[in-house]
Length: 356
Ligand SMILES: Nc1ncnc2c1ncn2[C@@H]1O[C@H](COP(=O)(O)OP(=O)(O)OP(=O)(O)O)[C@@H](O)[C@H]1O
Ligand SMILES: [Mg+2]
Image 1 (cartoon, rainbow, N blue to C red):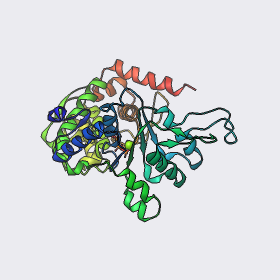
Image 2 (cartoon, protein in one colour):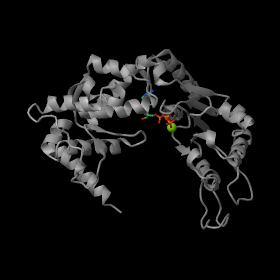
Image 3 (tube, rainbow, N blue to C red):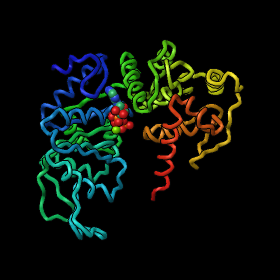
């Protein structure tokens, strides 16, 4: 239990609330015992991170951790993706193909979004859990499975069972070891540590000079309900860090949907603060030296959940450039980065866009 005594978390999982301490102790137990694990929790609560932590602390760690989102695989593809196929198993199967069970051999197979798993796959999956074997498509015999399965869902599996969409016997098998990740709104005491951690990492990554949050900004963060949980927090901190650029992150730097400040007001405050002599006129027309157009409304940019950090950063920087009338020096100043760094980022995105 030595790691549980670390102040702010367990491995890469941060938090020190009673609910998270309970999660840490379950993650540690799950790492020690080679049983299937079911991780439940709302979107963005850290299910995949917890699964990786279990794998990394388990004896299977030197072997692969393979993550597969079963919810997005088509009915036709999923069996072959999971179990592999032999050449000629179906039209188009021109080569033997290894499935995820083979790729994860000796390691951990993380099956995400299992609630929407196809009925046929549920049956095959149950067989792996019960008998430890699977059969690639077109193969005459079974193969021994040497993987630990960690499944995750952000949907209510009991409801799915009641609706006939999920097999009860499979649910029973999976709930031998069940970890539920609490939503962020139920452990707001963890928020400052998480926010600080994300701020520090974006400061380094984006070469910013931000130093922390002022009280008002932290209060706004703690007042918000975070329906997208830690992923949403992480994205919001990226945006706030870029907006602040240097010094403290203040209330005006927090994305308006979170701070509930009127977006135009927030933009005007920033405009006044950074350009005392430039008035508050904000450009709405898209313009982009890299030819990537951004839809911006006065002083705001919409960064939807699900983007990679680089995509979010790109959206944000281009919107700021637009806001600064395509003046790179002005935009770099607003973003709190050197003109050279801004120039390099734009050049990198432009060249990756032109790649085939
Ligand atoms: N306790 C935590 N400490 C630090 N970072 C965390 C923690 N929980 C989640 N994160 C980070 O938040 C983001 C979302 O986590 P993750 O992808 O594991 O969520 P999820 O529950 O699998 O989400 P989804 O249901 O949408 O797939 C990741 O960048 C992850 O590193
Ligand atoms: Mg996930």
